[in-house]
Amino acid sequence: MSTATSTPGRAAGRRARGRFFGLRVAAAVVVSLVTLFPLYWMVVVALSSRAELLGGTLRLWPRELTAANFERVFSSFPVGTWVSNSVAIAGVTAVITVVTSLLGGYAFAHLRFRGSGLLFVAALATLMIPVQVIMVPLFRLVTALELYGTYWAVILPTAASAFGIFLARQSMLGIPRDLVDAARIDGAGHLRIFTAVVLPLSKPLVAVLFFMSVLQSWNDFAWPLIALQQNRLFTLPIGLLYLQGQFGSDYGATMAFALLNVAPMVVLFLVF
Amino acid sequence: MTATTVRRPPVAAGGPPRRRRGWRSGPVREQLAGYAFVGPAALLLGLFVLLPLAWALLISFQRTDGFGQGTWAGLENYGRLLGDAQFWRAAGNTVLFTALVTPLSMAMGLAVAVLLNSVLPARGVFRSVLILPMAISGVATALMGVLVFDENSGILDRLVRAAGLPDVPWQSGGAAAFASVVLVTLWWRVGFNMLIYLAGLQGISPVLYEQARLDGAGAWQQFRYVTVPLVGPSSFFLLVMNVIYSFQVFDVVFVMTGGGPRDATSVLVTYAYETGFVTRDQGYAAAIGVVLLLVVLAFTAVQWRTSRTRDLVE
Image (cartoon, each protein chain N blue to C red):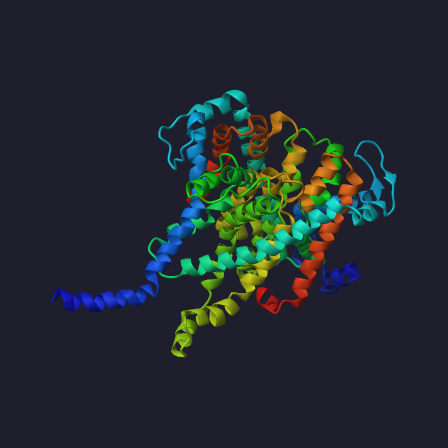
């Protein structure tokens, strides 16, 4: 009885699983381990004592955990300031990115105005410009505008996102034209249509834009490296590079600090 | 021209009572609203990207260290590029890096996407793990790379020694250092490629595979003649994105190797940065940037024209 039911069941299960099932599972596990290992190793090094790291025998897990690396980092560098710099810059940048992307996306999706196609292509073309191409004049511009030495030196040049505008436009094209037209016939102005009709339908878009912008700003490196040369203004990636320069091969301390940079985004990523 | 054609309708519509309404919902008002909505983004992009771009072109014709006024140098900076071995080394490395990272990350991304699109236990967990590197900053990624590839205490070196294999000079050998940068970049980038391909794969109807199977196609043939052509739009998008990204690679190189040993991993953006903000030869740095941008633009234009799958993207 039991064999009679289980045999066709197993055959059906095998068919549903497809071919090379075991091999595919093994491959997925191996690929995942390769991806996770450097992150795991970073955590291990951050929690290991110096003696253990320099010890002759190779261990893939720590014998005893210690917070000494974190203590050394916190006592030697203004970590709290750097964390709040990162939070402030990422937060303000993300708000500006979300607002400008939503406004621009709505215009490109639902408003007819002369030169809109050209403007849209011009915005997208800015994606191809590496910051190193414009860094010299951008630094002079930021200095001339008296933004140098403030958060704005990083926030304003990175706040408008061509990709964000593109994403917002694509998303808003999905809002039925009839809905927008109906509001217009009812006498609503464009700002009113935007706030009362389009925005309530764009909540997932707002979340995606905000998350994307925070991630990018939190991890940004090349331009902040040039624009934030004062220790008190450093964001976490710049602080990380500075700390590595000071501590050299003290990997425990470097990785302890790197965790502060990495962990919040990993958590956000997994929650999202 | 615009003004006349746009303004006429409300007038033609006649009486004063309707005029205001025609003005409100008419094209002029819509045009003004369009400019107002695009305004903030256009202002920021124009002021902080396009203006500096034009300015960079101007500076590339000057001799300047960034302090005081520069002097006009004509094409001198561009002439110097031709005979600058360091520039050609960086340009060659940039092209080699792009030629390695683009196809490898796309092929690996597609392979993993196909794998994680098939029936597997805990498929969602595997997918989350694979895209996790996208959340890690370039600096942290590069430092993890150092941790793995360090020649004295790196974990890879210890594993190799424990296995009794010969040491690889990951930091002191030019080719090995270059390979280590490529490997770290792949670790960082494959997840993004997989994500785009997964989206592409989910748009393919299972019926097509069923039909291919009935026609006697094996697993490889199904992949070659159904999957690969049908993810064409994803491939085109990724090709453009990977090339643009690879030409801009900065964080990993700058932090992991600093362009060394002996310029073996130096790329155009790190060379431009060193020239502009370390040696402060800013006119020359601008010229390097302009050349870099022209190469990226040329590539993208060629890609856009020749791609057969372009229509599917639009």
